[in-house]
Length: 502
Ligand SMILES: Cc1ncc(COP(=O)(O)O)c(C=O)c1O
Image (cartoon, rainbow, N blue to C red; front, top):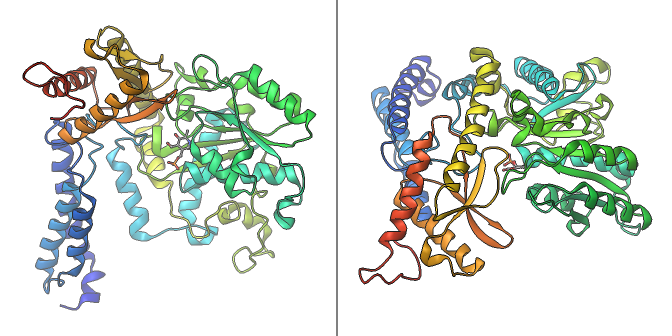
């Protein structure tokens, strides 16, 4: 068997593909049945060694041997995977994606349709533009007036949008660099904003120390009165404000900043409004939850991750500019071998002019596939289902004497603490440490995957409901599992040990 012929054989490809689909079908069926562990046993060195071993064994010499090896490889990938399709995965802000979205991505990957210029990935570019138009209109921007693109993740999206804000605010900075002798400009955001905002300030040469954290209200949203004070302070001390970065929503507890009041202030002070709607932009699709993002159409730039609440595989993050004229502001790049100056109209479709990436993965196929196959109503259903379930979970927590909900959820992120009677006297810090230990034990048991966060410096448990197949019954079981883990940790004499172990 000639290896090159085998590697490019359509027949071998089809046989491996059919085999893989059967394995994935069995995998999904098993996970939907809540069968088996949520998180595999996490042993990084052993996993790396196992992955390396696969690379060191000799390739099979027949097509049948290749098919068998492929099937074992898929088994290994599934056995060691984090199981987002298990309805007990309620951890990070990554969804159980609509599985067929993965197949759309596969078409793009097998044919390899990367983009920088239109000609490299014509259909991928067309799909991206169609999605930008449709999502931008969902945000409330009038058709034809705004611009946008897809990039590799929300962090890069925040960076690119804020690069544009910096270039607009500081004029010649792209060519001349940041003037370190001048009074340092500031960026205003809130304490719970995603770390990529501060990181962007570092990367943009603004300095993380010049990121000012505006005060919060009692629901951890940016307080417009505190924002006014910071804007006035910046003005009176002669410091330029690059942008006000609002969150829709914040990462720790899913708080939505009040955009109408913030937009009013940005207009009054002539400051760029950036909205990080990586997670909560999805509220636009729901008449029931749209009020959370009211005013988002007044933002100068918006970031929205489809690989969060639009239920497609990572990565697919959108950047929008309200004003189309800003679309080439981030990079004033001259690359004539790519962007043909004799055909300037085409630059409209050469997305590489607007992104950090030159070659960029065709990241829009998954969302385009789900939207085109099932219609936009599916997205609304999935979003509303997960948001609604979080409200029910909060209600459930409120009814338990041994659980403390720590906020009223605005979306599908819920933060709480377990506090049985014998922990009531603990300090916040000690109670927080118990939450971290309890979480580690829960994950180790394989029953659930949840995350932790810190509120006012103390640990808390955090769930993000991003699997549309998770039910209230699953969440009731979560509470039972936490109680049972705690009980197991109490010694036979009734003495509580210093930490929880199963
Ligand atoms: C509000 C917010 N912005 C940005 C990001 C970063 O997105 P990504 O992980 O795609 O880089 C996150 C990630 O959770 C987030 O919650």
